Length: 154
Length: 388
Image (cartoon, rainbow over all chains, first blue to last red; front, top):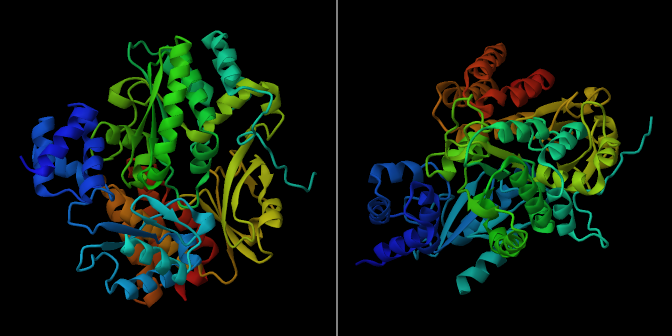
């Protein structure tokens, strides 16, 4: 049995074998594997007795349930109005230059994926970004680079 | 008239002399109907933005004949410019739990859920710990009610109550047709009370302080106070609890940098108020209602960029199931870009305004229905900035 199958079974045992558990199971897979592979979605469908298309249908609706491979660390920069006003363009550019990728792409070594997302709920402390689940506020280009350097050392 | 804005300290107030659980015990000792009457009398309206009377919502749910009912705390705070619910859940989560437990007792629900947006995942671990502790207190009191946390995964539209239920049930977060309303058929198609985080805290604090104290604040149509999220061009961005019913000019005097040309009241889906209307705009249900978002723009900002940002946001966050919203958002965005480039005449803006009227009538949920708010208020008041 593959690692993904085991993970899915464990999550289904924890959350229960019902449709209502689908979000929690998918979130659990993303937490571990950073995205939902075809194999993962088929495994979830099998365990919850749904069609794989149904699982993909739910997954593809949600920004945080990625269905394409992502890096070990996912950087999400808020692009909504106040963060925009406070300089998210400069922060994004600095990280693009640092990681040598554009927004939406993943580095060759699969360490980082750089994304822009809608409002993260820190409009009073913009610009802001999430790295995985951690939040970093009141960014400057320099501060953002330092945060990401910290992650590349981990 | 009092020229000072009245700052209030109810939501985040920590009483040294009051054990929060005493508030719960006091409520549990009252008949459920009395609590509903108190809430209706207090005039408390939902603090998420739509502003339905909380007491009535509870009453409708209580009156439904069903063995299974639910209480849901809507913490899917996604409106641009709003960040108060995160602060409340971080600082005073027990007050939210107590509001939910009182609701469970009143309407006869056994399960409560906090649906928190995926962007706030970092809060969940700490929240779960406090919740486990609180659930034990409920068991100790023999109250048949337990609360659990459910997470979102990055979808603005899931803040719409019926989309939130769909998401909790494992489906795409697509809003349902209404009626039936949640009080009749909500989560799992069972009667459900769904309240905003802040609303539940006011329930707790009305129980603690009494109806009278709450009614002394605000105006006839907008009772009480409200937590505001202040951002944009202000030297003091942050979270403030203020009395409802204040004129916008007082707000601007207090918070703006002296150069405010517009305030977006109620987030991206709210209304843009230009400087010339600051004096006669009231912040409250009788004027412009708000979920608490106040974004200030000074004269260095291009209102075209502001509107463009909002429309991009709605285009991406529209769930796509109904055509007026899916296509409407795209066309509004393309439309202002075409006018800006000179490919369409300025009069095209009036055609786009007609489109927002169609969206208001025909879109299935509040998202598509309210895109006209920012669009019309910005186009009407800053037309030259959109064209040139």
